Amino acid sequence: MRWETRRQFVSTNGGVILIVEDNGDDATLIRLGFQRAGFANRIQTAASVADGLDYLNGAGRYADRAKFPFPSLVILDHKVPGDGWPVIEWVRQRPGLILLPVIVFSGSEDPNHRRKALELGANAYHIKPADFSEFSLVIKRIGEFWLRDGHGPGQNDA
Image 1 (tube, rainbow, N blue to C red):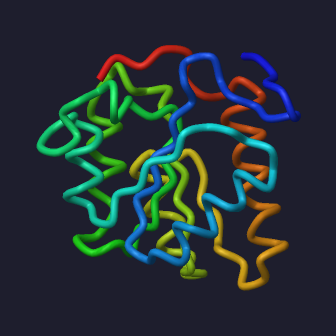
Image 2 (image 1 turned 180 degrees about the vertical axis):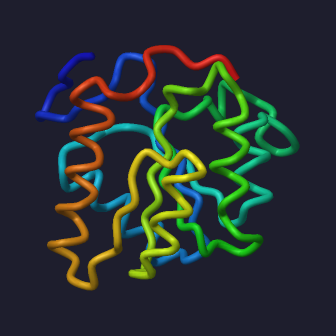
């Protein structure tokens, strides 16, 4: 890992963050949260489960891995249309992706949603705060733990 100019951090493998989120405003807030925390990682978004799975598979419009590199971190809203749970299942069914962090970032406080996410193999479940400062703080903590502190994957083989 290396520090970039202006105190921005980028992980050594490109550090692409995939956000699977149907709410454009929330996707923008997540992007701004990472930027505000000093992360210069490339961020890609998918607005549905189908798009998220296509991205992970490198299929369809995401086939060009130079343009759409495999992510080092997945941020998932499990309430994305099509039900977000299959994204976690897809990742966890591939032994080569065991180290790929999948973080559920949801508006749901339902403990059953948290339990299901963790049972399926999500690395963490965070509730989206309503206040942008708190929202940004959660995003910063996610980035620091999974990208900056080396808990994420070193190399991904999709």
